[in-house]
Image (cartoon, rainbow, N blue to C red):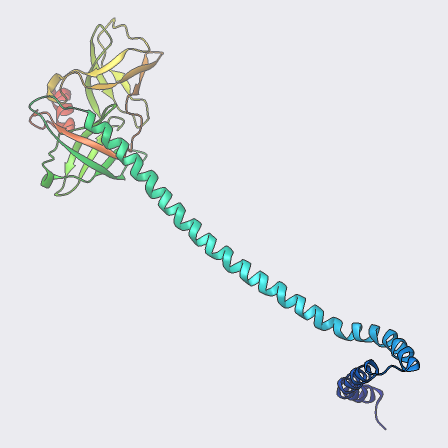
Length: 287
């Protein structure tokens, strides 16, 4: 005995086979009715149309849904491709924007550097900052000029705002600068209108300190700090910064050049026999 499920499956198969034929026959009947003028056939056609139309609507609904789904999917794929293309163009424009900003900054820095005229009997080289070797116990920069470009140990690193540091190591195409903020940095300076002579001592912070002041020296916030030219480390009169705080005998200096990793620096040889900073400090300590 056939199972109920098997009978239902066979009935569905028969309906799939004969439904198109039935619809074709109904269509042919409609065509035949449309060519006759018999009023009874017209009434029968109308009644049959009223009965068949809902059936045809139900049968064709999946086709309409399928067409709508295809249209939606096509629109989605087209929109996805367009969005992907626009994202790619946006990334490209962002890259060009970043390049343009970088070139604009570099151009501005170079213009500022061109406005700086070193004193007579000095030579200078403009170099790009390559890396920051600073850390917890050191403050230094690596720049893209070395002995091949005429850079020597002891050359002063300058920006349009003031002194940045000094060359302490050279290679054929690179140099390492020790910044004024480095713990080992000691720069002879003069402070204020009274030209108080002392030492600017780096302490690995953004505000190095003034030490070795003479007794009864009066220093106030706002006093300008310049290189003194003593012991031949730096020439006299180069801008360092201003006194920012005087608290419990500790005097902090706000440097004119607060950007410790600028895009470009100018390395200036003032003809001071390239006295190294640590050698000067050793001589002073020995004295």
